[in-house]
Image 1 (cartoon, rainbow, N blue to C red):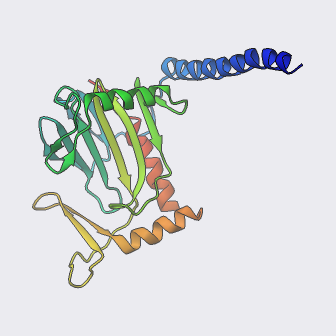
Image 2 (image 1 turned 180 degrees about the vertical axis):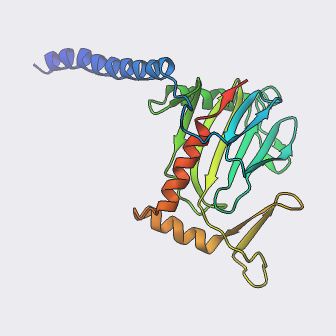
Image 3 (image 1 turned 120 degrees about the horizontal axis):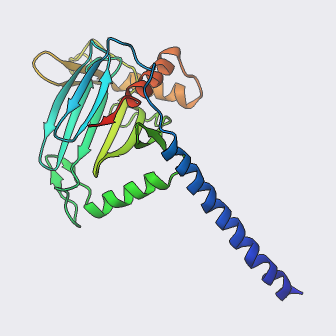
Length: 237
């Protein structure tokens, strides 16, 4: 009797596993066939940023600017805004110039190897929650309310061709006092001679705690909505 149960159970398990694999493939195929476009999601006066080096563009509010903050052959960093309320960070790792096996540093940031990047791409493409924005497969996480660094609010992972892109937005917190003497919790990010972003870690931790408790303000909801609007405008040139 026990042997008969085993004989029946094995094919049932195979059928269930096969069904899950089939569902994921169908789900991902529907994402391929039904890309999300940016039609009517942004205002007509938004500007378009074009990055010819990595072959992509996106739209952003007209009062924002995009600063090429760091540029190495292996990676690049863009700061989008800058605006104390809406501060985005976009990191790009160049696949061609990535280490083939052993990670190394570019500036003060560790680089992922080509093998690691291939693994990340595979995980994104096989994730059933992946979204297709203009034929760019993007894996989002709108629940990274951590005070780590400056307090992430949104995270999006995707590839432009074979180059890995990591886009983050931050909790909408500002502090007009950047003096480390008067306010030791303040962090000021100097972007250039005229532009900087003020971040207060104490305020960020308080906001993160509220969100983790389910208290989401209108300001935070609007910030998430704006992030998704910007995200939906990304296109490959």
